[in-house]
Image: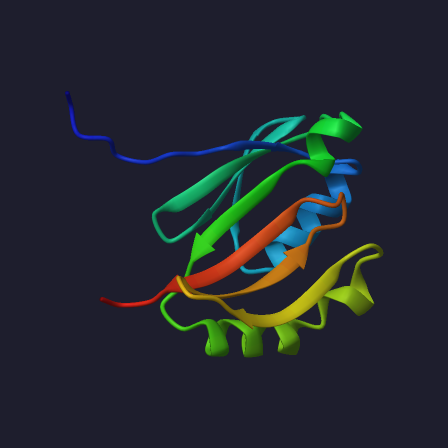
Length: 121
């Protein structure tokens, strides 16, 4: 089997322009691919944002972004103050689990992001 290079999920947006703005504000670099699709990258990681909305799909979409330091990442998210700038955006404080810890961010469409770190063994 050949070595995998990356994985890029496709996610939808209820309001494509609003979601594009949100992800740029979150720190992702946008590469416009067409009028209804963009690639958003942070470092070597990325995902495709589409101007497509299917409520059941969006309501059940979750993405996990592993970060080096959850406390620092959460602090950075707080400083961005995204919930006051984008309707529907919610930031949930850090939770500790046996496997590690994470905080949560709902995007303007309702997609749930997990920003977490695993316990080092």
